[in-house]
Image (tube, rainbow, N blue to C red; front, side, top):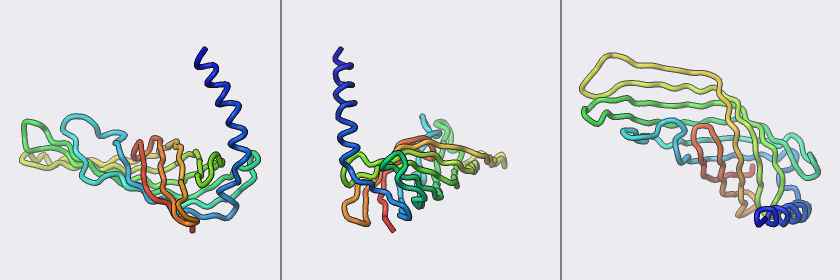
Length: 185
């Protein structure tokens, strides 16, 4: 019963909040995001360490506004890189991994709070993974793998001024959590 009451309160407040906010992302607006990732999507567990934390850069331009009243749609590009290392616990030997993700991204923005640009979207990209051994045992083996990938994300940019914002994105891509700064160009 408690969950039902809380849900009804949230549903009754959401339209008031949504309809009192002005659109934040308008036709022609351009954004540049610089992010630092926390949490690996693949290299976890004993023996793994980060050698280059997930770093991303993305660009977006708003191509359509007044979607579903105050929403907008943006498209752009994405580049992410990360590097990890796996060392066997009983030997000075292991693998170095590097990941690169290059893709296109599309976002749907909808204003919920003042100074907060809230959005969700998809990345469709191409990922390249390289693996190379290191240490005292050398077999001469290295590997590379690449292929198409997609990622869903949800995020927000809180604007401290007209051109500078703090950014957070949660999703599945080169990292689970991406924190950074955004610039409105």
